[in-house]
Amino acid sequence: MRRLGLLLLVLLLGFGVTSFLGFGPLVMNREGEQRIAFLLGDPVSVIEKPGLSLTWPFVTIDVFDARWRDLSSEPREIPTLDQERIVIDHYVVWRIADPLLFRRTFPTGLPEAEKQIDQQVRGQLREVVGQKSLMQVLKGERRSVLEEIAKKSSAAVERFGVEIRDVRINRTELPQGTEENVFARMRAERDRLARKYRAEGEEQARAIRAEADREAQVIVAEARRDAEVERGKGDAEAARIYAEAYSKDADFYAFTRGLEAYRKTLGKGTTLVLPPDHEFFRLFQSGGELPRGSNAGRARPEPSAEPALER
Image (cartoon, rainbow, N blue to C red; front, side, top):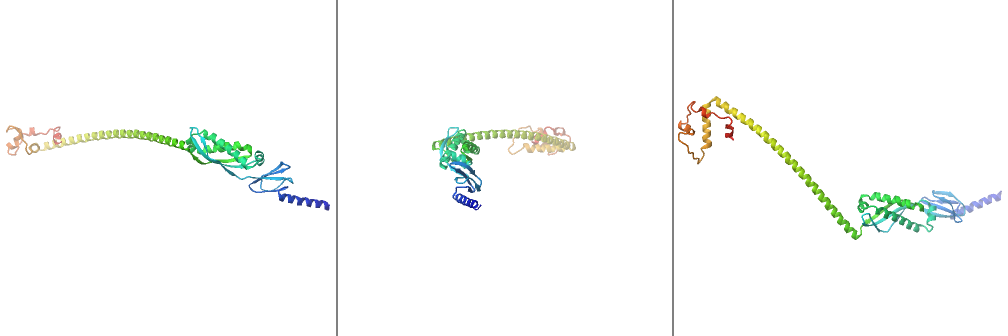
């Protein structure tokens, strides 16, 4: 019994020493780490959760980083759908999703893995960008282009035990020749839009002027109509007043109308060629007195003619 207890104690001490040295059977896994235990070269367990884990004794442990990593690429030219070349500098956010598959695929470690990831992402980037025009990549559909690249790249590297979370473009530039062509095309496009907007503005201006002219003609016509109506009313009222004045004192009315005729006719430098006994001089011949009833008939106003005389 004592020998058995001693044996157990020795085993526990041995396991403690081997565990401290990293040979199991107790393995301490830290946050952000993944470990694979190998016994005689064969994997016996994969430890992904942080904390203390139990595995086989006398194993070797390989540690892998489980955190997200970024991988930057060198700028390279990529042709677009409209045969323009664009220089794209991108980076990839990735991590080891399956440490066992990752080790089998890349036994030499991270440099080989990063090279393969860069090749896969660059191939997907070239494919997606090649299906888009330059303006779609630069502005119109930039977000959807990046999402499509990330989705296809993640599917392409899944067989390596790698997960890609995002693909982003650090910088987008145009080669010297392409830049000049793009600027020329942009200027031509702006000129076309300017001509279009000017033509549309001129068309709208013509429509507005035509509408304004039509409304002005309508307003003037209505004003003239109203003026004729008011003028007719005024003529009728004047005729009524003339008739009323005549009916009250025809001789006096004839006298005042005669004076009015003199005032309008006999101005400075006026010459009249008339016989002395002409009706026009009747007031001069009578000494300014108009015999009652003598010229009443001739002095009677014509309602239709009097307003014309006033105007």
